[in-house]
Length: 198
View 1 (tube, rainbow, N blue to C red):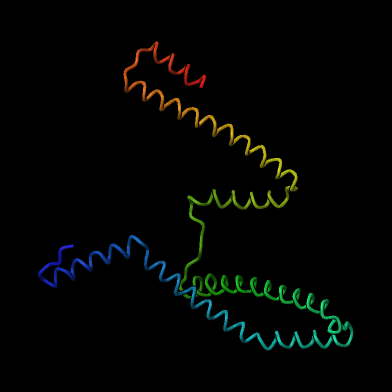
View 2: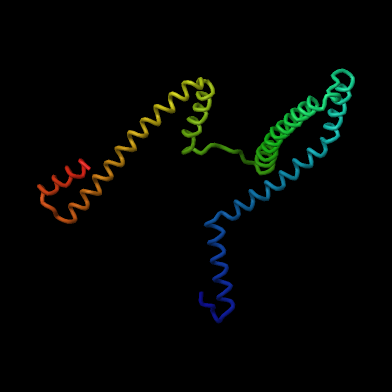
């Protein structure tokens, strides 16, 4: 890039390029989504920190119940398994609560109440949305054996269609080569037969 002698021209050029960069790369959309995501994450972490005493209370009650009635603490292996299962269940519950809180805060509080908008499915995407819901329901109701059979049938069909596409493409390429070389019809037929034999 040639640097202009006038600094004002450089500023105008930079401003124009920066506007195009922001618009073409959706910088404002990405930056806004990132900022909202970070803020929502920090809020959820703060909510979980407020719930920490409740978690400690539940754990203390569980340990008391264990010591009085179950006695798993006397069996390290069994106690380790039980602790791991409890920890896995807690993190799974935390994951579900995080997703639910994110939806409640972003959609209901921010989007609906503060901004005054509502998330909707676009008209051109409505068909895909319906198909996705029906496919998910159908997939859950279909036995695994039937799913495997359908996958194998689809793979076989895809293989047949793929072979036909490849054959058609090869024939098209041969015809283009032959027509560009202006070979006589007799020679063209002989060449096609030879390529089929090979």
